[in-house]
Each structure stands twice: as C-alpha cells, then as structure tokens.
Length: 133
Image 1 (tube, rainbow, N blue to C red):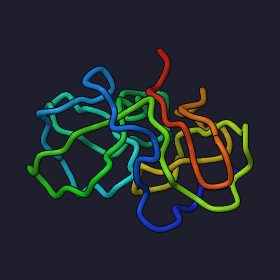
Image 2 (tube, rainbow, N blue to C red):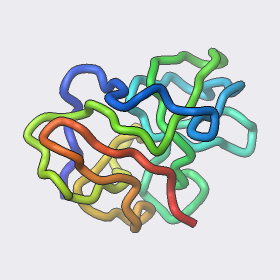
Image 3 (cartoon, helix red, strand yellow):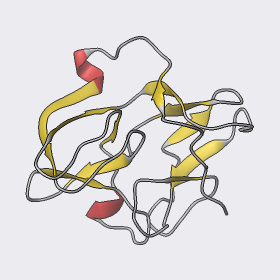
C-alpha cells in the first residue's frame, strides 16, 4: 500500500463541474491544499478526510480544488477528472489514505477507506468520487 504522489498542483481536467457536482458556501476548518479529499465535520467546517478508522472522518464528501486556510471559503467538487499524478496505472482503484495529516489518496484500501473513491483514467488523471455509503 502506498500513497499516490501528487505531481505539481492537482487541477481539473474535465469541464467545469455543474452545480450538482459542487458543494459551495463552506468554510475551511484547517489548512487545505488543492487535491485534498475532504469531509464536512459536525461543526460544518471542511476538514481533510483520513482513512485511519471507519468513522465520519473517513467519509469523503468532495475534493478541494484550491487552497484555503482556517475559516476561508472553500468549494468541494466530486465526480470530476483531475490531473493528479504521474505514471499512474489506468483502471486502478483509488482509496482514502490513512497517512497522518489526511486528505491523501492511496493505491490500496485502508481501515477507513475500504471502498474506492475514484479510479485512474490514464497516466496522469484520476476520476474522483464521493464515498459510497
């Protein structure tokens, strides 16, 4: 099991997502960077998702496509193609990582990320999805 390394700053490679693929009007509960897998905490703030346990922190609601600091506005997107890595294996499933700090993607299931949250489209792009419940 290994985290999937970001190659540069992750960016959308599909058309601008429609309103049904965005969650707007949110505030960051911590510092976020582009490509972070995120959840919405009980406080209503956006936090990095982490797959260390099967709990609310492991539920991916969307992905930050821009950086944000504490209490700054953030929009989450999902069901989008993102330029994310390099030398990725097309067709491979993507899971939520259990690495400290959160927000990362892994090439294998973790305790809290047992189901795929995306798949590799080609050598550089990943289709990012929400957690399935």
